[in-house]
Image (tube, rainbow, N blue to C red; front, side, top):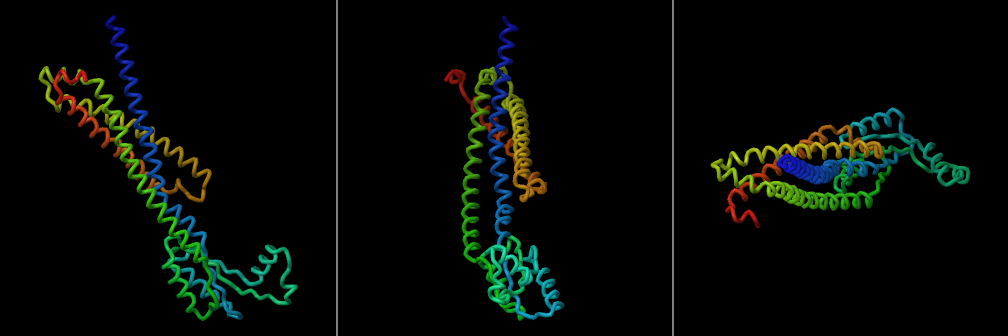
Length: 292
């Protein structure tokens, strides 16, 4: 009879530990997911910003050597990600292909101009910076016209700021929810051992002595939950890198390391604090209050 009861108690204890680990893992996985989005927000935003290009239409009959020198000078600017020369013949061929008709044969001449297509780094794609960059280009004696999609840049900047704000807000809110959920799981686990805690206290064990094994066990469960959460996040990163390879998620090992470290620190901190306050609560209760 005694052995059956002990086996039942062990099964109940393992079930309790399992539910705590799963709860911690699920909550930390969602926290890690939000953390990944926050860390990658700037990279994703830059990906969309860099789709915007500046086109410099050049004046006619520029010496090739001067043009090459100017292209090299522009290519060395801090804001330039990539620069490509597009001759007016190439531009005419592309335009004829788009409209499905040879407009040069109709006009008798090619009205287009040689151009430099400049891909700008994401950090510089803001209304203020782009206005300054294009104003400098207009001062060049080789440039006849500068074109870029100003309304698109203003829309992108506005939307990215709004998305970043709401992501930070929701991440903060979700972190609070995560703390509450993990704390509840830990308190329920400690609640099932409240009579053991009071018995140890009644035979003379100090509060620190009673609290120590509970804290250590909770930290172990938290670390196990963090490990499961990190495996889930890493699996998701591998999947996203396959589906959207342009984001290069796997190459940012520093960000992934920070995210993993954050998940571990959060799990240890929450489980330690939750166990500390839960055990303190039951240590301070009178014996008759344990039944309520």
